[in-house]
Image (cartoon, rainbow, N blue to C red; front, side):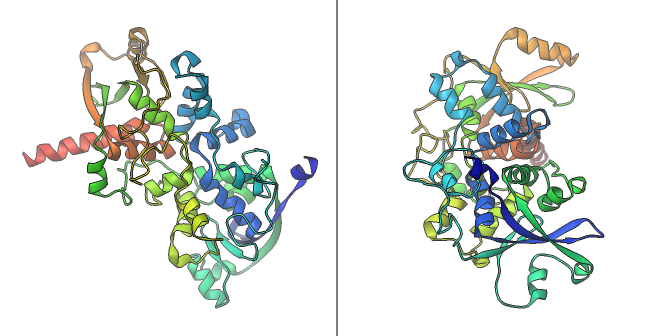
Amino acid sequence: MEMEMELKLHVKVVINKEKTKVLFAEADSNFADVLLSFLLLPLGTIVRVLEKHYRRKAPVIGSLTTLYKGATNLNFIYFEGEHAKNHIISSTHFETEFCKLGLNICGTHPTSSSSGKSNDGVFIKSTARCIISDDLRVLPIVTGSIIETLSSLGIAVEDMDGTETRNVASGLNEIKALLKESLISTNPLTSLIFPGRRQMILATDRHVFLSRIDENAILRNTKRMILKVMLQKSTNMLLFAQADSDFVNFLFANLTISLGRVEWFLGSDSGLKSIDNLHRSVADDSNNIRVKDSYTKDLLIKPKPTDHTYSCSENEYCFLNFNRHMSYGYVDGAIMYMVSDDLTVAPLGVTSGLSIINELKISLSDIKEVKMQVGLEEGLSILKAALTSTTALTDGLIKPFLKKQEREQQLQ
């Protein structure tokens, strides 16, 4: 165990000293494998790993952090058995693959089918070397013009003046730091080497770009969940939503989806720019990364664990519980729940609802209740917003709803 903790992965980093900026890194398959393993991490596991590592200084990842904490803090009595809660807050898939990595960010131990680091490479062929840009585009090292390589990375020739190459050793601490930076920064390598040079990812007013979801897929997923949303009349500000178990099951199931699957759902356009680039590096056939085989490529592009969260095998667009085929639920279906803008879930109570209204000093006469339908499109919009925004319901549901209403009124 001590030897495993001492293991370091080495990577060559080319920096512009004057701009204190990483231009690119050159790495072997061991480092590339660990980087690509980020795509297999369930969203809840990402929050759990960072919370455990950084404790009070853990970063806030959109609304995922509060969604995860809400699931953790919700009493076991509201779940369909202790195993249901445990599946949400400690879900880890692909243990065999993680245990083969030189550095296992999940901390899982080898099983009988996985005995430590693989000599054949885990995702990338062991003989392959890669170029990694500051924003996590991964390219194969090929013979050709250095100028062309720099151009493909978006690096100007003048940026190479006065560069310095450093050999950087990365252990688990550095890999966890890289995971954090890839979720909150658009230049994670620079942020890792020069902590003060972080460029933050900003949540913007946007509607989800459904490049993987066509109209037929939306029509096939006919299920709609009903939310009763409490809005302030004068401002359309969201106060909270009242939901039954279907919607809460959907929210909690998001924590069990792997990051790569989320990227596939959203067409490598999740708003997490560095993770988008990492996913495109594998998904783009023209990139020619030396992935081991087609099964491994598929695993990274759209990881699909064989458990109840994906119950609709005949339709790859089937999204969690947006189809009646899913009979499993996480929470008690006999009660109603209150969902905050940041996706915090709690049992619904009259006093808790009034408490929120009183804290905001809003008159009851200035409150309206709006029924909203949440289907596949709306669900993906909420999921996308949750990755970068601490107001996921407002950005993923309310704003698109109000814009649609405005367009319809203009057409009348």
